[in-house]
Image (cartoon, rainbow, N blue to C red):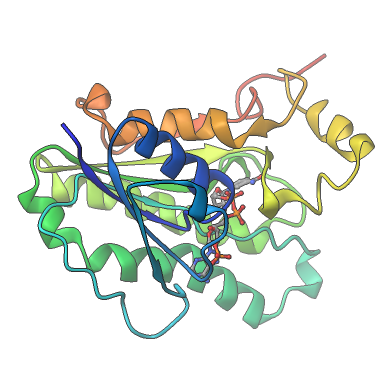
Length: 233
Ligand SMILES: NC(=O)c1ccc[n+]([C@@H]2O[C@H](COP(=O)([O-])OP(=O)(O)OC[C@H]3O[C@@H](n4cnc5c(N)ncnc54)[C@H](OP(=O)(O)O)[C@@H]3O)[C@@H](O)[C@H]2O)c1
């Protein structure tokens, strides 16, 4: 049966790929993002123009919401001494407050929809100390806290999980992966010897959004080519 999903940040990168995979399975997706991106090529998608840093939450009028994925994020890497209060503020706006605002606009509907599921995205830099990641790790660490807290608060009606990524080849990572050389050296930091793809990440996200993961909640799942657990020789 066709389900109704919301993908915040579904116009590019991982969110686009989640949207594509969900619509390919016959589901309907409402995408919230500032631009339409590549969405024109997909059917069963409605796009709502929305900036997650705006003061107001989005106006969503859906009768059922089976799943919600929040994909906007930041890679703001700077030495600690150069980080300004605004850096922390900006990262928090996009990674945390945007997630809260958008989810609050649909959470009541999700509680009424049997077996609904929420997916957030974090970074391996929360569990592994990495230089220059203080601001983004602080924001994503907060999002991991929200994941566990909401998983408790919304159980048993709504499941909440979070995928903690290492470098994935998307527009967000384009500066880190701007040449074949950079891509190769980034890949070599992982036991699986390469960076991830949006398609691989979306496969896990759509699993978490589906009933196939019906006994999973409150989890921070590492999807990172081994980065969080395996040290290459
Ligand atoms: N790629 C990586 O290496 C990596 C690593 C660790 C964690 N992650 C996390 O994975 C998630 C997905 O990342 P990605 O690589 O797919 O990012 P991406 O390629 O930059 O895509 C982000 C999506 O969010 C939307 N977005 C960004 N800012 C927005 C705003 N202010 N208001 C509304 N929509 C906004 C963008 O659309 P518009 O521009 O049209 O608004 C786009 O659809 C993020 O949470 C990121 O932090 C990624």
